[in-house]
Length: 122
Image (cartoon, rainbow, N blue to C red; front, side, top):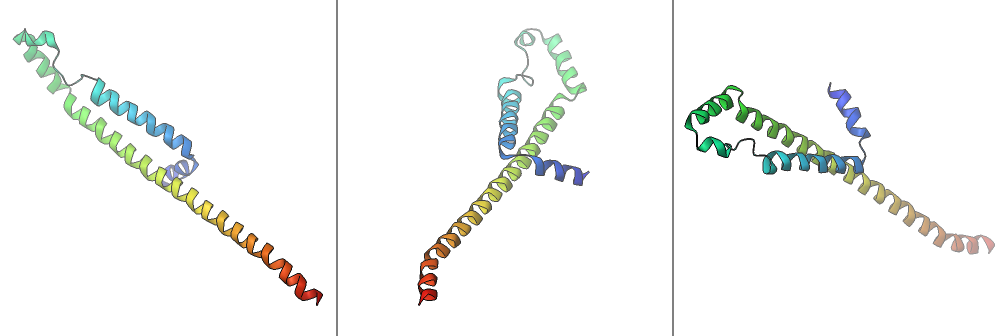
């Protein structure tokens, strides 16, 4: 359920999200650019009888509907990966901010120590 997905998403590292995004883009490219799945094969242009049978088969198996469904699902996956990537980037940014604050605090303490020592010695 939703809780299982939440746990799984939290375990994804930034590098894994980037790899999954690359795989997704590759799949989308192969389906939408390289594939000619929705194109009518050239040999059917010359034979109208086969062409009508081909069109009937395409309608029967609902190829365009399935093609659209795959693209819709790929879009949902893309949006999910974008959200996860943004969350990871934000988390990294927050951690860096914490480290910077700690370093500034440490620098302040190190600068103040000589003054405190001089004050205590007097």
